[in-house]
Amino acid sequence: MSTAKAITGARIFDGASWHENAALVFGNGRVEAIRPVAALPEGIETIDAGGGLIVPGFIDLQVNGGGGVLLNEEPTVEGLKQICAAHAKFGTTGLLPTLITDTFEITAKTVEAGKQAKQQGVPGFLGLHLEGPHLSIARKGAHDPKLIRPMEEKDIELMLSCQGIFDAMMITVAPENVTPEQAKRLAEAGLMVSLGHTDTTYETARAYSEAGVRTVTHLFNAMSPLGHRQPGVVGAALDIGPLYAGLIADGIHVHPAAMGIALRAKNGPGKIFIVTDAMSPIGTDMKSFTLNGREILRRDGRLTLADGTLAGADIDMISSVRFVHERLGLPIEEALRMASTYPAEAAWLSGRKGALKPGFDADFVVLTEDLGMESTWIGGTMVHQE
Image (cartoon, rainbow, N blue to C red):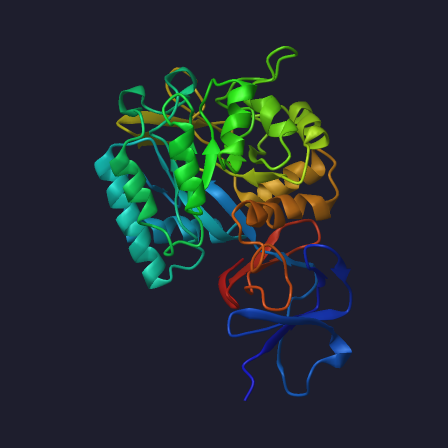
């Protein structure tokens, strides 16, 4: 007896094109097909979406917290569950909970919690993003400078222990504290090594790309800027074809004009994809929280230290999609790909995530025509409904 279901009553975007008067057929956690409603098998269970859009689930490769939980303060399986559940409410079906620069002990505890979360099948949990502590003091941002340090063998061994366990793992590093040989070793093990929080040069960034660095962390923020004689890391991210780059699309971290310029300038095949860089307040009415013993204030869409330094972002994925579509004028198809297809490509997950194709994971979001949330589905199971 078939366990397949079909969701109907909405336009379907498969990641490349739209399907009208069609149904998304899925079973056993995977997409089976997109078929005309008239061609559905007799007796198949159908779900009426009630109009709107069915789109690939969003993938967020940089999520520091959500639902009142900050990973640094709650590096446990329960903390990971709460973060994943908080972001599912905003269409995120796959994410990398992100640990900001901390002690080796907290990092090791987080890695162990991640392994347990993967073993338990926490919905939406893909793996971890370790953003530090091997960064540049000069471009530290909100990271605690007392905890920033060079990469050691114990750090490499800890990260390599995640091989074959996580779907993806991302490591943000700066050449100031990580050698090309260390970056290459991690990249060859299948980890996503990303340049971020660095004041390095264009030439050095290119050398690290050739060593296997895959991405650039939150483009424009906490990195050497684009200059006409010194292109910096921003110039490297836009010019070096294989590099992907995350972008915080809140209009605060990066001016909309700069965002548009970057999107038009990016050399492929690498793409610019959306990250939220979200912190614990997402999905709550919190006004402040603590990071490494320092208070972070939430005001007017900003999260800042007492001195005004930005400390993560106060935005979710569906709001980010709306921003790049409505404020930047990108076609809705491209805005959706920036939140699904492109991060899946960057994380080497494009064979099963980031689109609605036969055999892909049945991760999808049902939206209203004006991009409001209706429901979120992970592996064919509805995990949130408005």
